[in-house]
Length: 115
Image (cartoon, rainbow, N blue to C red; front, side):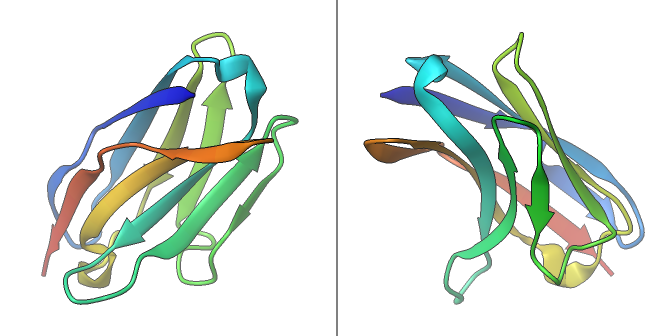
């Protein structure tokens, strides 16, 4: 099992930027990919971005071109650089680690974008 801790959330004005971090500990060598999801109030949790162990990333259409996912394997940390933030990006952002035998979730970090 992998323990995940997110950080970097906060309050930002529309058009601003934030960088989220997710530090993994435990059996991190078993991780195949890491991803970010988000859940806005009253809405279902949705996929945001994913990065494979080889460093290949992909994004939801709603964040393509504004968000960048990256990882530092030496630090077992994945990042989500969020630029040109919009009020509709307001949500709790969750980090996940996909292993061969399961998926682990972090506790989430709140991102609030004011208009």
